[in-house]
Image (cartoon, rainbow, N blue to C red; front, top):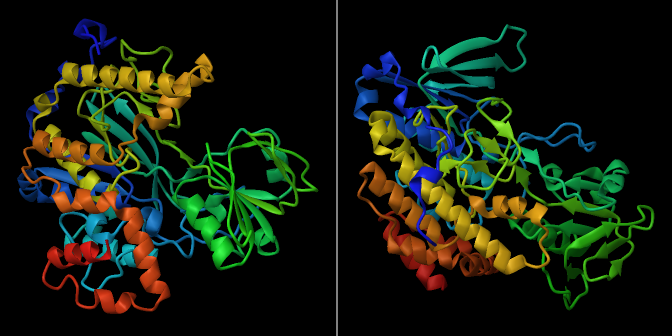
Length: 507
């Protein structure tokens, strides 16, 4: 990339220079939104800091649900109409797609003899143990939803309005120095704009995977013998496999850029992107290659989720894409629903409407190992909370523009000339927070260096993450053969080395 002129990067000077008189005091009140894995990591890292232990820092976490766990806390999906979205997309048969020694927080391993790819209930128990071990529950207010958070420039603090779920009490207001957004990004389903899909939804012949619990729920799925599953992510793969193997249904699995391929038994037909949903009654769809499939009785849309920040409003947050490509960076913060922009280190807004270091987002990157990543992110947040000058705004802005230009060039190279100009922002937004393979570990190491934490991602973590697909298939083979229990019995009692040895044996 050519040299970037720093003067062209930032449209308006961020409010990092507008220091409130209270900032001279070391006291800091921190608000954490959410008590899922990211929120718990935030609490733990804050509690570890000497200024917290000296009672100079204080923290409160607000959680809308009745307990901790976020996406790992089950929720009944009783509404097939699509009017009420479940609190979690967790389906009954979900197991992790990462081996737990790789997945765990750096500060707590899973118990010895835990299945290598554990079920969701085991992960929830692990999170409960984490919260209990580090005494986090005392800082959480459950069944309390943040309905509005706005920056009060006159006070130099966040005004946070909360509402007790199920209560008729009036909303309450509190003020905080730092707002940590840890509300996850699996709450608002993303529906495709494919022609005809709304007619299928209205007819009760399709639903988003957020409603899926098992082959009999949603109820209309129970009697369907031929099911179309759209989406090539973990949910789409798991659901299509469960419908075929456990429920013996015929599955048509649609993935982007997928080649037509049929299984030997004919119960799995892989196809490319759906171009149009046609007649609802006959269950006909057309794929991008022009081929058609009839007789589809139900469709599961495993088409992902939107970034949803319902407690933030203008001027703190604009919904939509920035009005122009950088440079310069926009003066305000934007949620395109695909990405939040601009964030330094995928964490800190650098905009003129929010003082630098007064707001932090956790867990935004995807295709990552989330638990240890949010730990590293929060260590960076704490370092900025203690010493705001550590965040070099101009350097971070240059890095953002550099990343934008690199991704833009990559997208155009891959998709031109088929990509219309109007679709470019969406294509960039879709991959903006994606940190694949080694990049996520370099990112974690970079956060550690920034925060003054000298531990680095172990080589075996990088190795086993790269082999996660093979490991999961080998583990499933052991489970089918009834041998999994004997493989893991006692493993981990002597530390993580036993797990590393076991995973290498599987390979």
